[in-house]
Image (cartoon, rainbow, N blue to C red; front, side):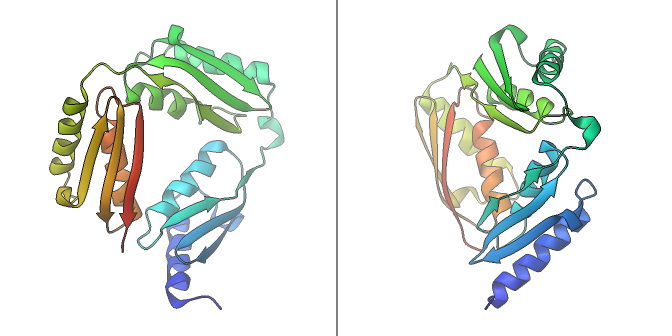
Length: 219
């Protein structure tokens, strides 16, 4: 028997998916158990797959999302790995935010793997963000590493200041630990969206190469 809380979360997730114009809600199945949302069905692009996951996480009460969506590309969208690789390399060449000579690209069965080294997390994110919109891409593994250039104390201070500036976050409820380029977040927030915002703020600090998000969601 489905608990009342789970039934209400499911209703809200379906409504949120329906609200997003980029997703076909009729193609996505939603199940909820103990606050964990499972998405099933199929979408036509990698970007839609990630968007469905992101939209579900922002619903209050959601503790985690298990994403079981498959990608079924329209016939015209099927491309060879060589074509996809050329598109990726061409996109990087015209992206001023990322040094193209630092990124290596591998494509296998539509799945893109990124390797290399950059100085900022936003550069790593920019590469993946651009690629997920390319026609034919079925998935992305972002193995780009970040070379730290600041001290752990500076990283901790910058993240704590970022938390304090954000109206949606209660900075007193989140503790920051920093060792070299690794950051650990602890504490509790009221929604999955707040948890994601805290992690995004931590990633935005210069030199951060890993964020361990141990923040709990307590609706």
